[in-house]
Image (cartoon, rainbow, N blue to C red; front, side, top):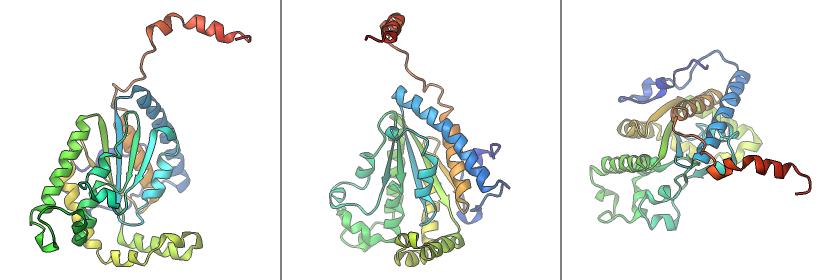
Amino acid sequence: MENLNSGDFLVTSPVKLDDIPTVLETGKSKKGKKKALKKIGKKLAKLQNTMYAHNRYGVLVCLQGMDTSGKDSLIREVFSKLNPRGVVVHSFKSPTRKELQHDYLWRHYVALPEKGKYSIFNRSHYENVLVTRVNPQYLLFENIPGIKRVEDIPADFWVMRLNQIRNFEEHISQNGIIVFKFFLHLSKEEQRLRLLRRLEKKDKNWKFAPGDLSERDLWDKYLNYYEEAINRTSLPHAPWYIIPADDKGMARYLVAKIIFEKMVNYTNIIEPLADAKLLENIDMYKEMLSRKDI
């Protein structure tokens, strides 16, 4: 698996999601995939510590995908080795009353990573061109000037919003945020099986909602809007990666591998040099601390 080419999952030209496989066969066992993930997780943790000390960059990881695509468990498994002080996870659900008093990107701006840290967006600003596009009545809660009814939404509204997202990502990348965007590409059949398991396992029942079934009826709409969003917003400073997600173990490994391979190329991320005065007196400090009477 170490020989997999991360570039094979990078979107550099228009894609058709129906033509992209949702599973990647490598012949690697479940145990082998976990072992590979653990190995690369340790490397990621080391890079994170250096970035934290360097304090110049932040990392934004956006995870999108259909329901049951494995976002929650991927976050748990991929980032478990990283220092918790340097990772903040944000799960974006329906906007709160306060959030609706601002423009739709406001809640994402305030959740951006501090320098030296990772922010993980479990769902992201792309929900604003996915969920609201499939359900345009939700847009009315935003109190946008000139839009009082669904019929008032201009024909070019969604292209405009996608352009705003492009500008948002360009702005943050120019200010030191390294952006990763992953679409966890799940098949409709695999989703059916995962929803069924939620009903069959008592400890998973709470994850199931009857609304999951009605959302499945909108599968093609969501896929079409995902496709448009990915094709319009995958740019060198904020690229999309399409990750085969029917196999959770493989999806986790690929996300970790891609982040590591991109981050290791930032050769300017180094640990800061100690203060010259400290270095000058380091032997004295060591001698002082070696004495038991101090």
